[in-house]
Image (cartoon, rainbow over all chains, first blue to last red; front, side, top):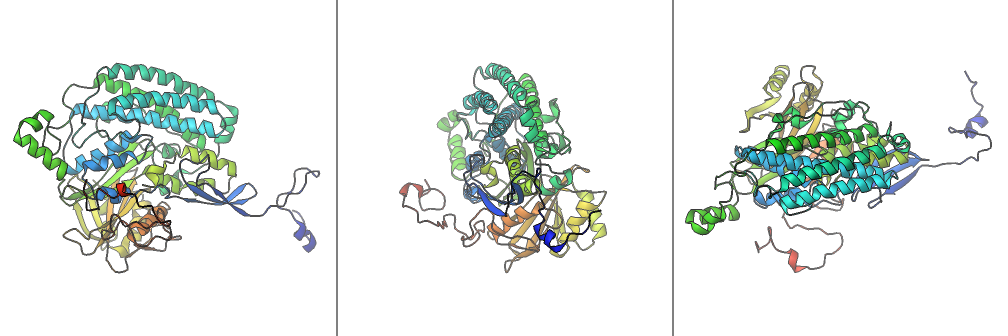
Length: 414
Length: 177
């Protein structure tokens, strides 16, 4: 037990003594630093106000809203189908999952089931985009920790998937694919064979990324034990997806409440244990492999048949009917001008997007337009917990933490 | 779907629920008395038979244009239990004058940002919230944009906007093109 210090000695006391007596004493004082709104290591436009004591973060306060576009207000003023382009812009890295998630919720609110082939195509599109989303995230982690080549391999693989998505939907990022009741068009000719080839190439590139990063000493040192959150805190904040599973909690909407045809496909859900950056990274690497499995199985099992319901109150009639019959013209006109009459009611429905549970709370007043479209973007809840993950840690740990939670401005800021 | 959770809660707090019903998709709803909101949330989270620990989401609805619009606002909550593998759907009704509710932040930290969102967009105050600031809109913004009486084109630019004719079409304007 040390003796109590004299008053003079107490004044001169330095809480962080230099390691060697030759080291110069560096007095520090608390300062507030703005990271962003457009810091190069910030995904999109977000401002992080951090209070620093030396290099230690005392308080972090993320300020969001720079990308707010009035998603809900816009949706309330257009027809149900016209909401679709707005949902692209939520998570612009994996737009198909937003499209299909929203459509599923609307279909459930109407109370219809879509054709089997459409369900398979939705699974294939979603899983392709899940691979693309995870590759972008993993590549960006490498990039921001100084490993540029991992990023290039990741983006090369993502670009191949984006090309397949372009062939399927006609757009690289803003897909607006799918309609209430199914899909507006079937798979293009020769697409399945191309996807299989693409998957082989993507698998090779993804394993390059894995080989470059997972056992890389510098990378592991920066990722392991940083940005830790306990399972209890993660649930409290509403973490879902890879960030929750990295804490050791087995929750995946695809398994917990299977939708479309996920119950007929064989795949595993990776679970972590430490809840740190490294585990969140590993979850994504493993999920890429599992998504490969799902796409391959789905391409094998996919049945022939229609891709959209033949119900003219919900889906547009075929063009030959629109140009050839009066009923076709009427149905087309009413669907375009008034929109789908979704019966009055409300529901909460969720699907598993790349970053976690994408939930929709929809309210309909029986008209052709939504009365309320609430979206539960997975990133919003996760970002709200970032202060807990970085406070008391080093400033440099903020960058990998911000990467692994994979905040997407479009969905967080609606 | 969550009948058991609600029955269990109603046994413990007989006056907590104003109404219970099931939506068309099979989801069970409970309308919670605002006075009992904290007790109900705490019970759902901590009771060993329930363990609704995952704070999924919350939002509000402005019922102004619906036939049954008194009280005007509804605040909805969604929680998930891994133990029961189900979600609960709850709502509180809030009147038009000085709308306020107790804050769930002492029970769920995740409610912090969601309550800021509801305050920002609907103007519902949460009593006991540690830091009730706007979250997506800027501090200088007047009004609450998701209220049904806030105009779709009610722009409040901090810097005057240049008149660009092209953007003044579509929903909320006279021209519906």
